[in-house]
Image 1: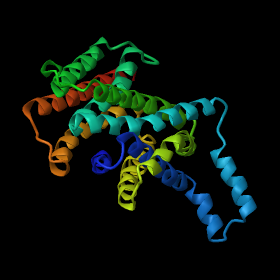
Image 2 (image 1 turned 90 degrees about the vertical axis):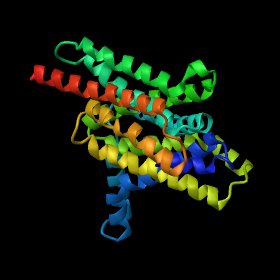
Image 3 (image 1 turned 90 degrees about the horizontal axis):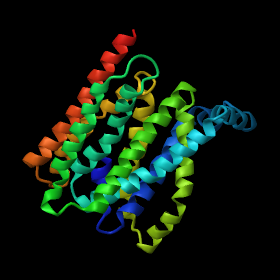
Length: 293
């Protein structure tokens, strides 16, 4: 939904700039959400400002080795929405962009199957990338000569960012610093995107366009991140990554309903193949866990 909303601004603003603005809106709101307990008690007067600042610092203080993870997450967050929106602006196919980007989380599970921390490898996991590759061919149709290389490449970059997000988030969750680590990374992402925001003024950004970017950022950068943080507290990162397989299916209907995109046989087949890759990964990952005990 966030990606679909963002496309409404592409005729007045570069998709890359729209992605930068959406990232900033979502990151700032998420940072406020992550620190809501301390900030709220300071605002209502139940916690002195000095003590509140000290407690807030203690909450966001990260263990040794965490700064590098935060930096990795910040770089990925700064890239993912601009890359996704650039791909959407060039491919004009929401299901194609979402399906390719979904390849990142699928690869997280495949990596876990081929290189598990404990237990045997599951070579059957190689079927997942094969299904994903066939899905990409069905979605992009390179034999027609109309595949936009830049748009396809941007979607692959978004997939790599999704892979990075899940790997880093899993390690942050193990350290018990997922929410605050993500909040700090988001603020760093906003700082990294500051040069791009200057272009927003060059585009003579209107309040209407800013509203679209804010809505997109809240959906893609805040709501999605909050739900992700909450979900990773209860399920493994590999399972979380594959369960997002509902996104490609949903993108078919969202693209048709809001963007007036046609649901073609090839596009549907590509989405189903990508979901099949994710489902196979879930099944293989479950079998691996059962064998480990």
